[in-house]
Length: 437
Image (cartoon, rainbow, N blue to C red; front, top):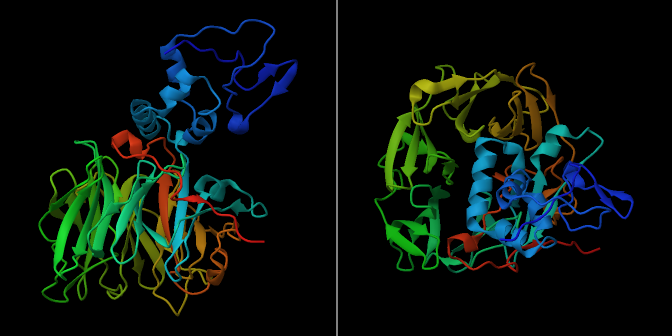
């Protein structure tokens, strides 16, 4: 790799006597005309500087810099190093974003928006939704490391990986059947493999449980049946169909609850060993309505369970150490508020994302997105402009029509691309959606 140069100043670049600034305060890393020769920096130092730039900024710069920088930014090793640094040192480098799709109507669009702007924008400044369009209706199975796993339905299901930050998708993986009941997507950090888990109804009508591995020669392996795929009785129920991936553990997780008891537990699938295990969650209070299903989510990188308690408030428990029941930690309660509850739906609060200052973004029982301050009990409804997402029958995000019409997934921007693990990159499967005027 040839040596490169960077500007002297961190915030501006002098070009022909003019000051040029860039978005997010990052320097313009382009060749420029200066009054004096730019300094020559070692390749190692240039790479350290690039590792400190957000993924979205690097994507914008990738096609405008010298070939050696472009090769570095596009490499698998750099993408992994950037992801590792952002997770361990500086989470701001991988901006959290929300992706959602319509579960009530078969729209081909997927909307995305910045989570950070939802927390930071004043009420009068809306957060803009960026919509993408596929070739047909697609749902989101899960996300990890900046990749979204999309379900492409038809006579037979297919699955493809999409990085909204880079714009690349993978070649669809054939399921040879229909995903049924339980499925999930995650990363096997031991073998460096991305895997899709699912119970599949084959063309013959037979049900099997499989793990698919994305790669140049995608593999599938039949494993032990999902433990609760065929329940012997109604004493234990499984929450939502999609298993939640916990980063760093290589596991997918589902919530179990007793239909007539205080029993609550987490069923875990280890994507490395491809085996199941189970551990307990905090028990519900005796006065709680057992018919209300607790909700499992990921907050601050940890498993979290949200309970509706005695029809007066919600309680969130955070699992500080994965798989250790003693590490469940109770957070401040969220009082019921007239604008949150909906007598026509179940009183279920669905946490989506939480800052370190205990401000929570959640989907309320009234189906509105809400910001809950756990420190003082106050709530605020963010202003999100979803007019461009093409989901006309759903109504805007601020005034949704009916329950459970949009399904939300958090992802973090990254440089990881399908080509890094042997799949060809494709940019035609998901494109920016331009609504008709």
